[in-house]
Length: 91
Image 1: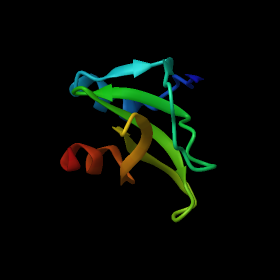
Image 2: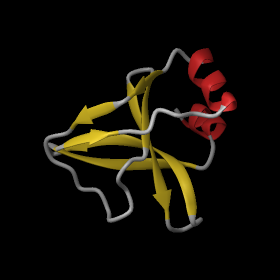
Image 3: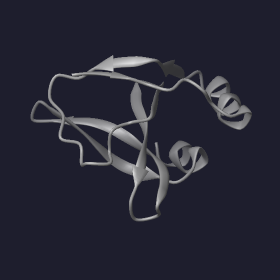
Image 4: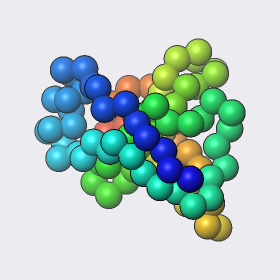
């Protein structure tokens, strides 16, 4: 399945992306996914070899950053972070 992403980021987000040598993704192809209904990523970037997606988090009723992981050949989101700073500290 091919996903196409929004590539618009705030100035603060762009500063984080630049400082951490991240790569903004405009699209990605994933063979098998196990995303929950609202977990389809709105934006994605690569942070030090780790793919990070912005997904809607129903628990906080807002968008969060989540790490894309592959387990048994299926992609899913794990390790959720409310802010990019929390993401940086968690990784």
